[in-house]
Length: 419
Image (tube, rainbow, N blue to C red):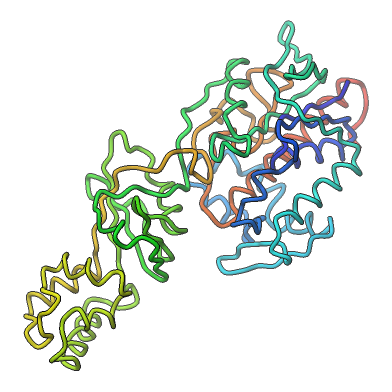
């Protein structure tokens, strides 16, 4: 019999198991995949964006939903502690643009291997099995029932992830376990997900990546719900890239709302400066065709789209472009409207929004308020953050909190002390 059974061997689960073992608990870690950390292998495009080198407050500012619930966990295990933890495991780290923290080797495998070594040293028993139910009697947790057998234990940490990237094993198992002990599970929705556009011109620019552009997301009432500058990518279905993934986290109600994006292709220039630039380009290329002038302003793939949107004929000589036409070009460059049909499927999302209702969970210990002995950590909870290492930071922090609290409850119950 183990003190603590951790269900799920991702970031939150590994951290919970390690934290519990370091607090003197005997721990069994159940993972349905042959290897731990399968989703970690693909984070940060295979480089593993471990955390973001910022303050606790900045972490919480990058959590659009239920950030207050995370205050205690992140305060006790902030980014600086996460960095020290992994460097203490022998993984040198580096900080890149946007304060994103990666292993210096650029290999996610180094993070996973370090966790595996730490789990072995701590005496955690890793078992390949899929949890199917929590066994309880008279409100007391007896252990976890798996497909391959029963695992008795005094506490269970549910860290199974959401439903994004199901091939990594995130298929919503934790939601069923939570519901079985009375928890409310808010419907999972995609967050940090590419967006499907109504206009077909996005598909015509498929593969085009734009850097240093600005977007503003507005809802059906024309209220701005998000604005940021960065990088986006046109795809066969619409839009993707870091800027779009972050924007999607604010577009939470497609059933009731219509969202659209205003894209500013020249955010460094205000309208007056851009108009002067357009005038100069047109005058300097007076005898050239309009589409040739555009090639000096935007990437080539975008030229036919701008010709169509402005209504200025491609072969129109630059000296013939009227003031009204120039104004239409300026408006299109500063405010290209893209209407959004909706997000891509949740299976394509980086993280899942929705999950176990946080008001039913203790924010300090991650303990269930409804089922003694049950704890939650990571993406199975109704919390999600923007890109940039913030979601992994939440996984480490909630995993640590859950593991320590689960270990403490078990050592107290058996009359031991907390080392």
